[in-house]
Length: 581
Image (tube, rainbow, N blue to C red):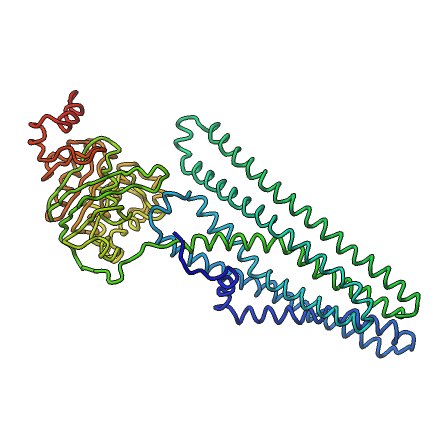
């Protein structure tokens, strides 16, 4: 969903210069002075040829050439400022955009991440922003320097001979028209290439993350084949891009070389008929060299402008996606009791078929009770858990907690009251202590240790050389599945929320470890609303109520004993799991 009010891309881009306008102004002043210096050299050359040398004015000639040398020294300093401070402007703007983009990503709905690959998002945060940074520095500087030089050269040439100047400049609009005609083709080619590059980054990210699975199933050849397909698409897109660029630059170079031809032909004829003298002819040729340099710069920078403009457009595409919206007068309760009601709820993930995961779903979870959701895969049990913290917006119906409609609750306040332990545990690249502290960043070390003890992971941590400061690696790769699960459970202990959601929380634990931790989970669930999703039915026997959920909705509900006596779906699942016990 896009924001309805959008500034033009140019206005939005310029706005990022404002915090760095002083540094940018210095950059532009230096560029202007360099342009003026570039215009002085042909003028002094003309004076030396026409005046100082013929009239043997040695002192004036020495003053002129040493003045040029002084200009070159000053120009070197100014170029240093352009290269150093100018790039700083671009880097700082890039940092501002990256920070803004990261904060925006933190607020986007979960559906965005369901539909977009991690590698593509990473490409936008790295490659695209780098291109924008280069454009932010070189774009205004080179364009400004080139325009000043072109205007200055026109004035100086007109002072020599206005008619010859008009003849030469009559060909410049042809170059401008050609660039405008090529703009659309190049923009399309650059955008296609950027999209393909993002897809390759996504494939690489996926392949590296799943390297252990790939090796285990000897599927390296398959991954290589999949990567090569993407790589081939990249080559095709890049080839198309360079084909358009080749057409553009070869034609632009011809136009620039043609200007030399016009100057030599026209200037030679003007000199032959006595309209200009030798010094003026020489100065004219030199000024054309000065003139061609900025035109060539504008032609060469066009690729950078296209890359930067394409990157900024893709940056704005993400920034224009609506974040999770809050109710205007959102309620922010300090602590909820956890009375949860699903009233005729319907929900389906964004897809072309529009199939609902749950439809007409109603359920009441009394405060302080433990409710277990069981049943075949695909019934929507995990989806139900994701709707309670409002990770997704429901399509119909109503969900309330303590009588508050979820849509009226502030998301942050809501999620502060919910602890979530999932089957697919994600640990951040950092220490064990940092990962447990996600439950409460204000917690003391003692509180973190106590939470780890309750999750039955403290003793293991203390055996490690670095203890709680042990690095877990990317996605917690240095820990076993059970250890990662227990770190995740420790987070929930530390958070101490009134509502607890355990989505296959003990699925990665062996039988011995499961027995050790079940008591802790029972203690954790005491006095708080607990929703347990489990396929292993031994973990939910003591729940206050067990609800059997299938694609058709709630099929059965009751205590363990009641459902066994009923002899329905639950009993069938239970008997199947324990038939060999």
